[in-house]
Length: 417
Image (cartoon, rainbow, N blue to C red):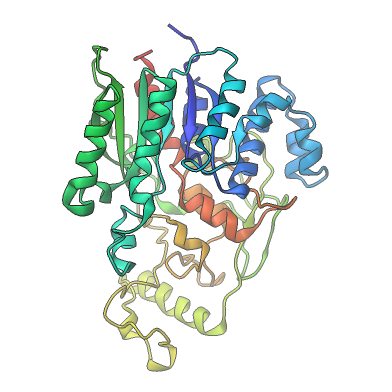
């Protein structure tokens, strides 16, 4: 039995799923991701883990404080680690990706493949917004590419993550085809329907996790659907130690916390020893949007009612579509045990993620969104250039698997090795 099961992460994104597996003692051999900014985020996080393992976090802290560049940070990291992040597109680039992974493996065995294809083609919202219900979207068939990697590397197990809509997409045909294809490649699979808030994440995020194993392996399946690690904490736990900022304000590199750590942040390792706050940045808003935000927050705080777009004064209504998405303006209520789901659309506007403090009158910051996803504060989301990018960061966060949830899943699966 391997003390550190090895894995490849496909469609790795910003690394939320991988972060959970690394924390559980698994060893990443390669991350494959086609988004360039996300690849820099992956490299920066691997830099953190390498420096933490050799007990020399000073360069990483200096980077978070903005006193050294990204290139300087990477100069402390072995080239093999940086090269393990492969910025290519699964499918068209498979031959190149296989070659790069093979060089990294150096005859090591791949125990596990993790990851999930982009979920827009299966998501209920994506299908509702698409003219043909996403039927022509090529992302519907990325599971075929996933199967190519199973065939190539023959891991004992795989962990496939996706949205709840994968069960109903095309009346369940895609899921049936996935199961048939994986069985053809030699794998049996078990599907779990999970809620992130059952894993201590302060967010109402439902996801599908598929565990696959080679069909000649006899295993005792973990019962993930009975896990109830929800907390008595409220969403306010992610807000109350952060400095107050207004729309368009905030600092990318290094701002001080407003208060000492609270129980939730300590228990879930959100603030985990490096007290350097970064990316507490709020997007700017128009005066009209800020007026709507005030109405939404007042309505929740005073009446515990959500804002219906059709109830706004006519002068504040600019959307022509008055028949769907009535709740396009929504407060992240601090007095609830979990928020609404954080999705990639947060990169386009913050209307669905309004901060509950009237005085700040803004949508949530990059760091607040990351906390709702259970990313630790020392997790830095990169842009393509040698600095972060607010839009790129929001997109990476919205597409991610909550690391806290991923970590518990990884621990539950580790006995299989």
